[in-house]
Length: 159
Image 1: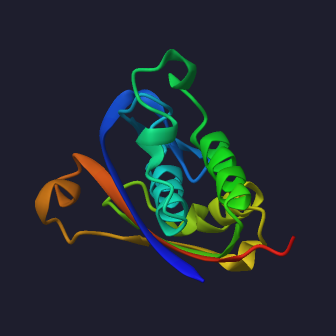
Image 2: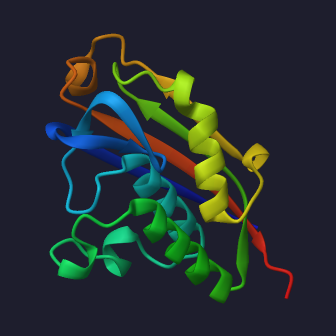
């Protein structure tokens, strides 16, 4: 088995839709980014790629390459899952923490879990999504953006 850690952060962009964990959150500001800015999907992608020693999201889907402009980050996550499968691994589980004052994660966490589980080719009970505030401290607490931490466990793939 292998364990990987992923992290991503983005500042808010009120001119974009808010996409987190593959779902659109109405009424929340979007996130700056070359793709759709989905920091949840980005952190999980880095966690699974890292666990398989396959680099990071930027290595496989580099910003600045037009093919990835405004890309659906859950699609990028699905592509990363294919890469870990080719390397002989499968996802065991993923644990994710979103740090922000807004949007509130709890009301949409189950929907995110289902969407992410589809991309990861696992059951939703193998995907955890939690929201934490930063108690008003730092740039997250000031509402400038959000950060995401993700941990992934990979297991050998049954061939």
